[in-house]
Each structure stands twice: as C-alpha cells, then as structure tokens.
Image 1: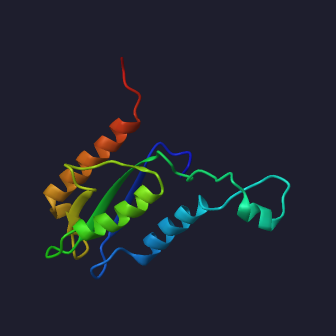
Image 2: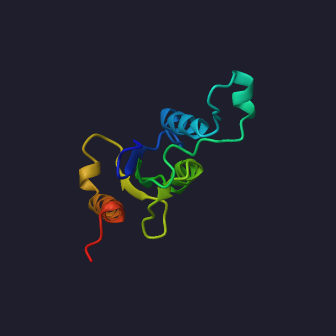
Amino acid sequence: MRESDGIILAYPKYLFNVPTKLLSFLERLDLMHHFRRRIESDYIEDLRAEQVLPPPLEGKPCCLLVVTDPEEKAENCLNMVGNEVRNLGMKLILFDSQLGAHAIGKLRGDIPKDEKGIEDCTKLLRKLINSVSPRNG
C-alpha cells in the first residue's frame, strides 16, 4: 500500500454500517503511526521517545466507493470511513463534494444495472488517476 500511487477502498454497507473488518484494518493502520522508535533503546525508552513515526500512508490519494441497498443512503457509511482515512493522513479524493461514490445493489447482478452508480464510480476513479498522473507541461 505504501508503494502504490493511490488507494481505492470499495466496500458494501452492511446492516446500517461499514464492514467491521474494514474498520478494524483502518484502525490498525492508524495505530501504526502512534508507535514510537529510538535506536538502541529499551522498551520503556521506546514508549517515551520523542521521535514519532509518520502515518504510513500520509499524503496517499484515496477514493471511497460504497454499495448499498436501494432504500439506504451512503452518507453515514462514507463519513465513517472518510474519518478513518483522514486520521491516516491520506488525501481523500472527493466526488462532487461528497466523500465518495455510491452504487446501488442488493442481489447478485444488481450493480451493473445501476448505470448512474457505475458512471459516478468511474468518474471518481478518473479523478484518482488524474491526481497521481504526472502533468504534461
């Protein structure tokens, strides 16, 4: 992830919430930058060290894509993951002033039928690509 040009987090919204495995993964990444280091010191000194490791994905462009049931909204789900991404110091790529793009699907095969959702996700992915592509003078 550190060597990637950008990160895409695509996930479903389960029962009014973000999948717990995704949140757990993001929270563990967030904890990584809280660890402190000092060369040739013991554990207690490590905890007291003034030098703090930077967040591992600081400044990394990231976009969010969420899939929900047709009756559900994506805002709360996007906000929750967006906050975790910001805590990591990542650069969140916005979609039309929203935190991410949203596709609708409940059953297998529903997402390809959501033309607007697919179009929105495609536009957001293009923004991510443009944010990491070198500009031609």
